[in-house]
Length: 66
Image (cartoon, rainbow, N blue to C red; front, top):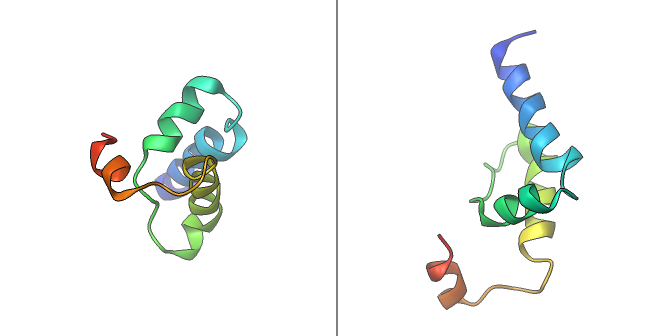
């Protein structure tokens, strides 16, 4: 298995498989969006669902969130 595949598997494990982990949930919510590339599609969808689970962010919230 290539390093690239291992990294992608690790990201999927942390973001998708553990999205219900409270500590990871908070951290996932703060991530910048994943790249708009087919290999990141599921990661991007999961991260966006978590980030916007309480509705859209205002511009002020986006700026304030680290």
